[in-house]
Image 1 (cartoon, one colour):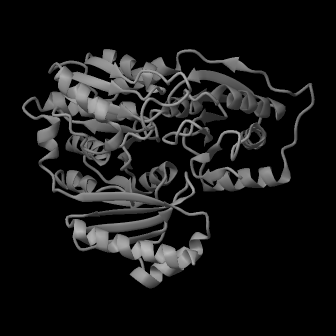
Image 2 (cartoon, rainbow, N blue to C red):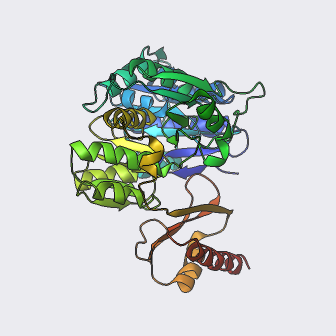
Length: 447
């Protein structure tokens, strides 16, 4: 088995599709790409993290780079540190929303952005050719960096719209035993928000205490805690802290897409301009932007793709419908802390509005996200899907179709061996009809 390679790096099941040898090779190649110099390295809380980190350090040092250990930190923290003066790049050791048996390397350039197209191409060329390892006179030296989380939190507090006073708020944090366990409480204290925490640590057997992805089905404990604590909002994280899902004051898990919509609502009210989300993001983003006379542009799925579209459109706010908010005035990456700051700012700036009443002010879209295991050739499936659905309205990332009352997106995943079916519509029957056609096309392709 081989690792999965995507715009966010490489990932696989540790010891099977991602071995220590794979990590060593990729880290060595990344070190060559970075050039000799310091590379920051952070990780999440997976039990395989220390083994992967050791291989990353060895690979980087073997080509003359100096790895700097950030410890257990969020992925956006790694991105911020990678963009620091004199830093050549960064590695976040995390498989994000994947289960605990997975791990990955998210590779970050010196601009704090996941590797762009040219850099990914160069990395693959280095991997194929093999890295040139240095001798004992040029081997890199390991080091540590202190205070990365504190710098991250202070940066969020320095955002013009961040509000640390005003209406008292109470929240519940579901940190899924991940990197937010240290980061989120620190941010709450700096924002003067009262908080309680659920799922503070990994289980004794090294698993996450709930499903790693902050989907509504995984948030029952958080929902119950919000009601029991009479909290204003619940914040749910993924293990590496770049995504945020919301639970309203009634305990309703409102879905990740409302996270981005709320950030757009908050920012565009004070700083109008274009916004960017990916092709699989809810029309809620368009609705939120339209309230302030602003337009939303769409990019292929993947953080780096959203960032590059934001650069093309001169946009400073955007994100992905999985709960990842990006504010380029701070840094060009998804950041759960930024999402929290804007949620808090919205609630404090609108004391007569609860999260639930704000959510209820939007159309009742039906969003369906399904995935089917698929290890075949997506190009052959693409041809079958085009024969079934016709010429797509957008083919930059799989097949995207505009529909009456919504849209349909079918694409090969970059993080799992699956094909994703994502659709949104005011009419659920429309989606189910399309899904039936999708399944038949999948069956025909397999046959």
